[in-house]
Length: 218
Ligand code: E4P
Image (cartoon, rainbow, N blue to C red; front, side, top):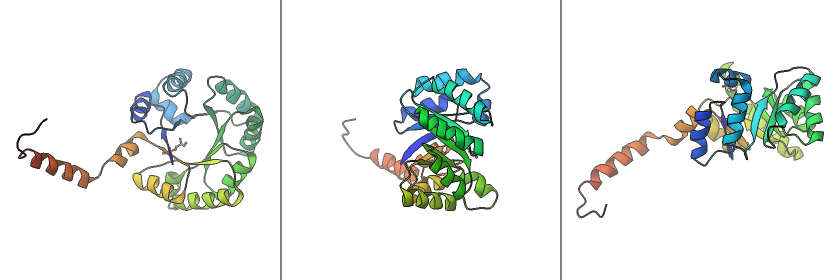
């Protein structure tokens, strides 16, 4: 299973990248706005840090022509740029266009199996179903992932499933159990994945007992 980081914060991307478990980056307009920096400055610093891993950059236009123009512009900045496109009719048409041009796409804001099926049929390289936002409205987000994995496997679509809107370690583990290809994870949740109270207690005890071992070489 691949781990992407869901942020536009360069310090978080650098920190996650230093762990050597990072497989890609996803951004969105909200995450970009949180940096307070000009869009293209953020794009360039991310692509400099991860020149060889997929980086999803979202278009801001909602019409077909606008999406094509923005996507083609962004794709010039690196062969690892993935154009993130909203799940709309114009978005689906844009996906086909980018597929023809050899530009990778990530269809975002997917909340139903029907939307996922359409995006996969359109030739999306990645799709991003949002589990956390479904949980927020009292739906079970992980049920969507289960359905999409089944559909993808029934028809051998090449599309990779990115579990998005991840809010906690359980989302990550359930994604892995269901066979999702990727989870895009906020930095905070990556840190939480490392932690277990029994690890801390165990380490503390080992260190205490180590104090009484005689003639230690280090
Ligand atoms: C997906 O690619 C989105 O950037 C992201 O996962 C949305 O997460 P949120 O629901 O926590 O904003």
